[in-house]
Image 1 (cartoon, rainbow, N blue to C red):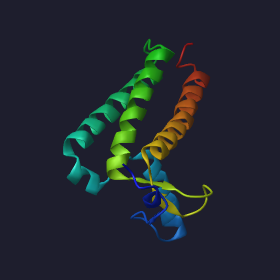
Image 2: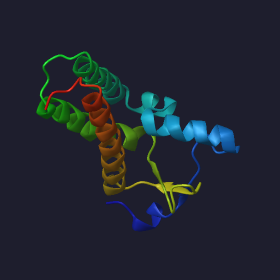
Image 3: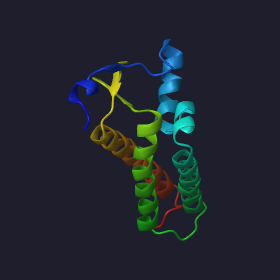
Image 4: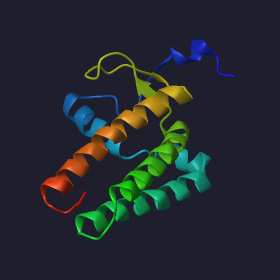
Amino acid sequence: MIDPRSMTEPVTPPYAGGALAHIGAEIWDHLWPWSRSGFQRQRAIQAAGLALALAATLVWVLAALGNNLTPGAIIGWWFGWSVFEVVVRLGSKPYVKEGPWWGQRYRKASVMDMICYVGFKNLLIGATLFIGLKSLGLLVI
């Protein structure tokens, strides 16, 4: 059982520092769910996550190259990646932002926090990729 008081304890990500470094690290943090310490603790899960990330990337590349992938197949791969990313992030980067998006306060994430974070983040990334592929004529719906 998770102690609710532990959810409000502040967490400091490894990149806390200057403004420019912070922006670059934020982008990296959103796009790369793995961490060095996560690899040490969960080698099998982290390795499977890298393999799944490569597979999901391959699906997006195949779609961009004009292969006949249905939107359902792409959404299925993206959903599968999102579920796995929740597990990877809970082991590697178990924190979420507390307060406004521009703030720099973080706290320990619960499973539901991570599901919401990963789900919303990947919804935005997936929608952007879908719109980009569709507008370039590379995705036929």
